[in-house]
Image 1 (cartoon, helix red, strand yellow):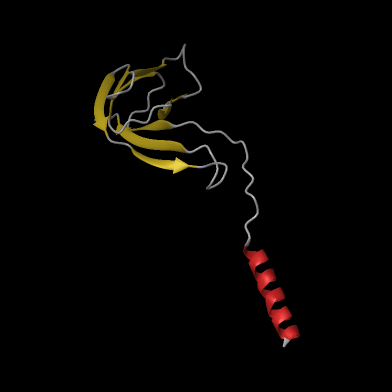
Image 2 (cartoon, rainbow, N blue to C red; image 1 turned 90 degrees about the vertical axis):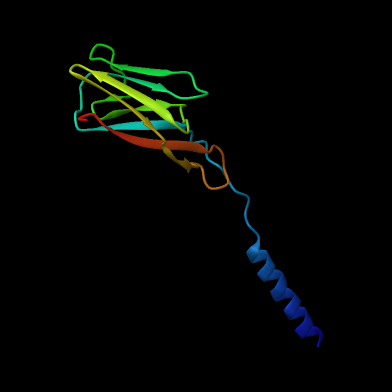
Length: 131
């Protein structure tokens, strides 16, 4: 009987040891919250985008040909550290302008794993510039 008890105790100990979770290792990948604004219809090479939202300083992106930055694309741009619940976007370009108020949908990203920081929010909206 002692041998059976010992064997059962040994098996239980091994089973519980298999359930232990190893300490999580987090990597150091960073991320930036932000809002991607995509254009459909007209895709101007040069444009200015102004974004206004309650509780946020206005953001202006000047994507003119002589001042274009890496965030400027003919089909849109990325507004870093800007994640409002509602935003008014005003786009002007040679030959047109469009203003839309939109409510972005955001998703969260954890690039270092589910239990590791940072947690970043990404939103995306599409504006039709041909209207």
